[in-house]
Length: 617
Picture (tube, rainbow, N blue to C red):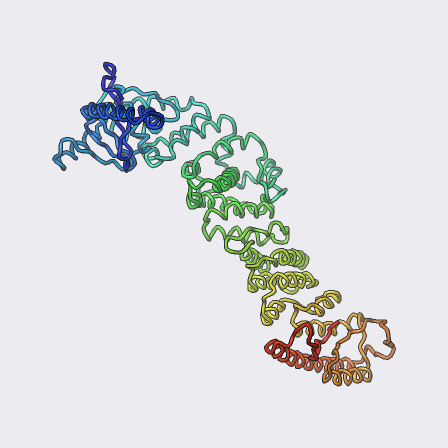
């Protein structure tokens, strides 16, 4: 800044950043940086002497300090600014009476636009009330003029009159200019709102939308919208959970041409826009606005990953408004996949518990239409997937009225697939696994093979489970609904506790009589087998339980009367006796194994003579 400024042109304000030891004028800062980097020590000293002389000369012109929002200090001429800013003149007088210091300073907090806003005001005052007004800065200039009382009372060439004149042509601006001006209000929204500027700009936005589409569609009720042919054809059937489902895509370009453009606005301004249409919160009964909010939240979620300028709580009101609109039309408009897409979008914005439960009830009632991909919602805790959500959805579905057996079984097959998908998760607790598996009644599964496969995967992925935990995990199985192949695999599975395997084999006994898939041994042959088992249970040989298939080797079908209830009763009694014997044998083996491990008996060179494990086939 030069002391000898042109005649009629006041010097620019001297600016210093708070916390810096040396003040640097903006128009000489780049030159000083260059000199410090590329000149000798002598040249630097000469520059500093010259610079200090200029600062001393400016002290007569910049006689007052103004601290703006605790961020920056401006050295200005009191008389120049007081000529145009009435409130500033009043503040300076009050401060001088309080401090009794001639050349003191003041602090202004919450100045519109911060240092940038005050710099614009300073340039206006130092330019004899002239400044270039554009759609990008008119909002800030207007709010600063209102804040500092820059009215006709203090100057005929006042800033407030200039900005109001510029805003009179608002409705003649282009669509892009209106949005740029509205977005510029973000950093000083409270001032722009209180001055009525935001409402004017929102009216201009709606006017532009009305010029290119039917503005009545924005205030039509959802009932009338959902009955229209366009809604019926444009809002059904989803294509992919990763992208916007077809059921949410606009039915025509004329209805949604403004979605992307308006999405650049911050959430608080969007709230004002929705409120101006009388469709905020529980008042939202408009399908088009619901679609726009979902579109806006989707884009905001993508921006939020790399931008933290807006907190999630700022979107919560918009998310609740969108969910209310979704719940209002329900499955008449949204497919099951589309509802899961909505849930994924809004879950990151802190929606209220009431609306979350409402959306979950809507999804839960359609769970039989879901796919495995729909259920794989990312978890918010340590787990990979949100298992608690699926448990809640299953319970809603199970308690729904009018659910047919076919729908139950379809959901049961889906849940078994889901169990198999989440089982490898190392952070998945047994209680969560059982919560999913046991949320549906037994009638939902024709066969429990899928549940057993999921248990097998879980045991494989969690090898450190104790005997009790593995037994507890298997409680969700209905052994009578296991197929023969699955039962054989379970009996041979070393990860399955022996008692569970025996219970599964016993359950197959009931199938032998009812389905003729198996045949029973006669009393004589059974007794012989029992004696054979008893003698071998006290020896070092293998103890076995063998279920022979129909037509097996060494079996005479005619010697097994199927209608004899006495034979069936005897067979069950002997089978129960075998279970007791095997449990006793397992306890003995467990004790022997513990002692052998304790005494370091196991080695590659030492033969073992302990009792062998029973083979279940």
